[in-house]
Image 1 (cartoon, rainbow, N blue to C red):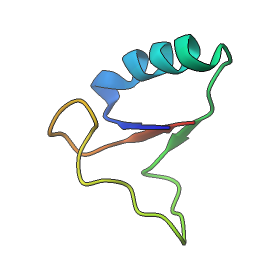
Image 2: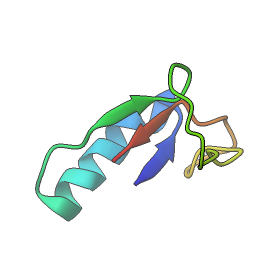
Image 3: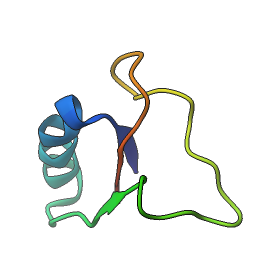
Length: 55
């Protein structure tokens, strides 16, 4: 699972495919809220706010 900004989305997808050999689901965090989970304050690769969850 990766929480990334728009700039790092493609890299996260590539990393997911390399690791799991399957296509990920991509969740837009601006449109989806989770009751039992809060996204991190910043992208895993930079200081921008995360926009996508790659699972």
